Image (cartoon, rainbow, N blue to C red; front, side, top):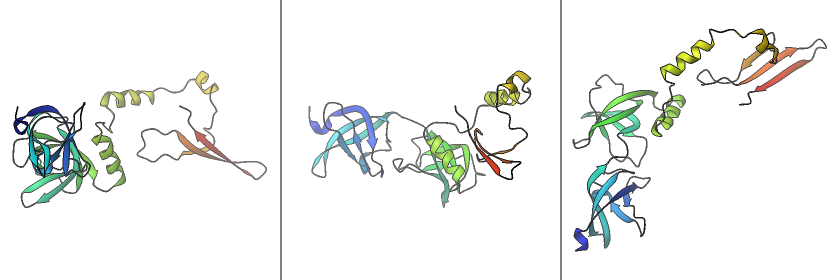
Length: 220
């Protein structure tokens, strides 16, 4: 078979800068894919490539994407003369996504979007979640979590179950098992946005004029 027409199927890996990729091979060296031959393929996608000769060596050209690793991406919502688009946080995702169905979405927010049409030019996506204003600490933390496929918010069922705990007072038997600081000035050092409050300080004025400072760290 003529090598210039040989086709292979496998996974592609795009480098950190997004400038080129590599077609991964298990038993031999990976094959470089130049930027202009990526054909919208992204890291982790299963692709079909055709081998060809470019820049003095054998390279791979993506013929088609067989399976996308993901359809959701995280980035900042920006605006140009064409409209609102998402600039992905991950430079490996070298493609911008035109936002559709969200004309009221504020520019400058971080968001999670889902692609609705890979074949459109430009690729179109819908906003699924607004994470907050880009650059703010809490927003950036949420963006990191979302980019790895996790949800920073608890499901409603979990929140409902947690709420039920507040509806039940501690019984005397449980109180007897614990160190009681209810009459001592004790305050958490976790931020207001924390998911759990398990670190605290306490301050007590002693009869001899000294101060007792307690450091409370939950042992989970």
